[in-house]
Amino acid sequence: MANNIGFAATGPTAGSIAAAAQSMLGNVAPGTVFASLQSLAMSGQALALLAAGADVVGLAGARAAVHARCAGRAGFAPPVAD
Image (cartoon, rainbow, N blue to C red):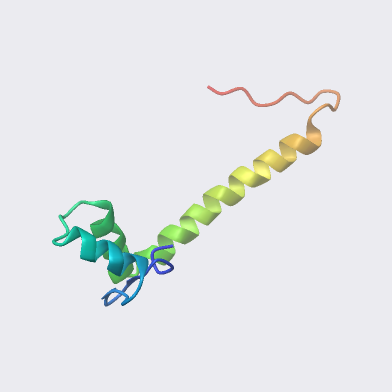
């Protein structure tokens, strides 16, 4: 995600959304969303974060698919939140 909008290991990519945002923001304060995305891109952690997010989404999708397929069958009860 970060790379798709212009956050790169060397800083915001010229002509990107990230570059436009930085030009509007001026000095970027530490701890902001912009600073965090740039930090992730520069450290190479953006791909790891994206992969982790894809795993979570995949698991949630698989759970929903199983639930939809089993709903209405005798003896099936959806899980109850604790």
